[in-house]
Length: 42
Image (cartoon, rainbow, N blue to C red; front, side, top):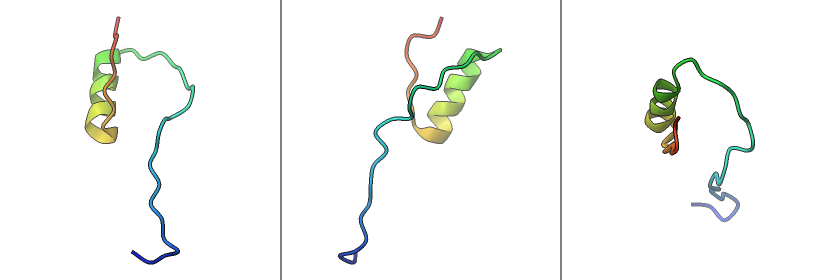
C-alpha cells in the first residue's frame, strides 16, 4: 500500500433509531449485509 493510502475502519453508525414492521427480518438484513449483530430485540 502506498504511503499516502490509508484504510480506515468504521467504528459506529451513529444514533439513528426507527421502527420496523418486522424487526427480526431487519436485524437479519443488518447482520447479512453489514456484519452487525443486533442484540435485545423485543
